Length: 386
Ligand code: ADP
Ligand code: MG
Image (cartoon, rainbow, N blue to C red; front, top):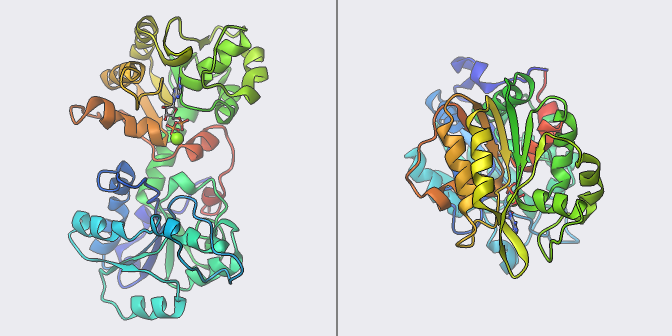
């Protein structure tokens, strides 16, 4: 079903209106400035500002515990929570946008409303971490309504949280006309192209920590994809299913039974060598890199989530480097790469010496991407459908 998209809205409708834009600023401390997620939200904001709209940015960050015993609209900040404030993003976004982004450090909604209302066209505001409010993760309709009252039009540009039934993602949509932003539209377009309009050979690459959230995709694409290349935790889980010694390697024990069911599938390609330390399998080995490289080179559709090894540790990044090189060399395939660590691994491993060509799409979603590809309905996206 098609979504209502801000890209189709006439500029007349934008002028003078207040847009509540749900973005994803869920970035770890220390990597705020260069985060791909922050860069990715700019087109929607710039578009709305250029056409004379006002923008109020809504986001969460991390998993703060909301203060207990007070209403869903109030919060008191503890030291630990302060680290999860969205304040640092105001100056970062100000620089990127070339205009002041006003940070609002409280949830006194009447004051916020008045402040936005009295501002000039082209103003940008950033609200505090919505998860400081208990109502956010509870998808509280009262909070959704209160947030909706701050603006005229709601825009979801936070694909990475669209699988969460949260007040600023789902409840709010009931009270205000709602649209998808440029980023969300692009995410869905690219994921649909890979999942529904794929060309063969179609290769799915899985690594990372868990396999449980990837099972849905293996099931859905078992007859459609040609290869599943497995590294990281998923590969270890298959080794355990084969009865091979895995020591204290990262394994998803809950998925061993599923892996056993898949052992006979010729499409599932497991590593043939590995890098180990203290009995732990921490990366795929050089022969496997060559083998994966050959498959990736010839693929026409590629979906990748999860690093091949513990790439953050020196000596265990070669597998992930190999997959990045192969993926970036293939200019013919339609490629989608997603997942927080997977996407951030590119700059850690390749530095600034890489070019992402048009055929490769970096998704801002991890869990959301996996759920969407599994065919599940995402509450934030359902809410925007016509
Ligand atoms: P993403 O964030 O891209 O969705 P995950 O969160 O599933 O990926 O997993 C990423 C993490 O998995 C990385 O921190 C990486 O170090 C770790 N990892 C991958 N392979 C291994 C391995 N063999 N042993 C331990 N950790 C691994
Ligand atoms: Mg992760």
